[in-house]
Length: 504
Image 1 (cartoon, rainbow, N blue to C red):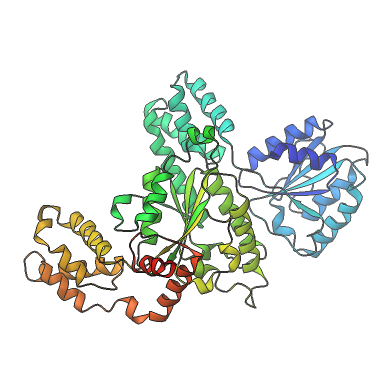
Image 2 (tube, helix red, strand yellow):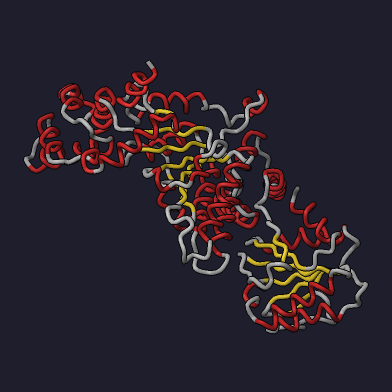
């Protein structure tokens, strides 16, 4: 159900107080006014703290700097007069006992009158007392059809036309921005060269990065890594390559649903984060990184509001990749005392969205400690697949050395003994192999020469791999994966061989 349809239903059902969290005040008010006109031509009254009520000359300025008086104005109108009262930024006054009590009194009265109070606010801030009388209605960012109308309006205003394919690309790049930001960035393009050009898509993407930065929840992550930059993990790479076109219209016509997501569980430094970046690059989709810790705020209701905002932005930017790094640490304290259940509510909202989302947001979650993950997170339906990423075997270590040395010394790759390097670094993870090469480069640089195979081996001898310092944790992870709880990311890992022996 769209916002307009849901709002119309609330008006007809005489829901007394509707709370609409949105930064798009102007656009929301236009939608409210249009729907109020359709639903019995209701009068609309706007109030804010600075100017009071506006519009009607007889009431202009009433309730200025007085939120309680603004609510009393509702009772001044005849009981049978249909009206909608828009109160801007009213969340700031909800903790005032007189305002809270007045709202609750009005909620009783308005059930039998054709009047509705709409609280417009950039975020949700409420109190326990008002929980039963407020109805929260989300106001979504503009959909593709609305953005296309705005782009076409601007094109008509400048007297130019663009190919349908270019317009569609521009519309797709604008998804996730508010109408005001879209107008602003396109006006910037027109001011720069007198018209909108296909190259202005980059301007839109930069505005989008700016918007995401301002949420302070998501990061727009540059994805330059390729699938070929991942050494080993053949099962995982095959799985990803098969789904390369799954977000296309051709896939929808075939009947394929959008891929839901992927969880990568395994030892630190084995390429889980690298995989998330490579997926975005290979599928040509924007990569959003979520730091779950940023979802938690100190104010009542703020964490839940941030979670909803994160979901709204991710869905507006879809199709996209949402990368949730180290999700096990984010929800490790689930059920702990002292947070008034905030962690549980945020977790509940997040996993419900994982299970029920229909938008093409592909979630890539990484985890190191399976102990810390709530069982609900691993239930089928949250992700398409759970992969275990273990330590690379000798063949995979050779591939990892090849990837790094090809990037650093492509002209001199044959001078390195890759087989010896792979053989001499048992139990090393991909990150530890990379660090070994960096240390070898320091050795060579300090002696004014290029680094050699012997330098890499000397650096390796000084590194104690995590596999030796965290043996119990790694053994638990391997036993967990061997029990069939996850699919193996590598075809020829030592764990894969162990499972084959168990099956024989």
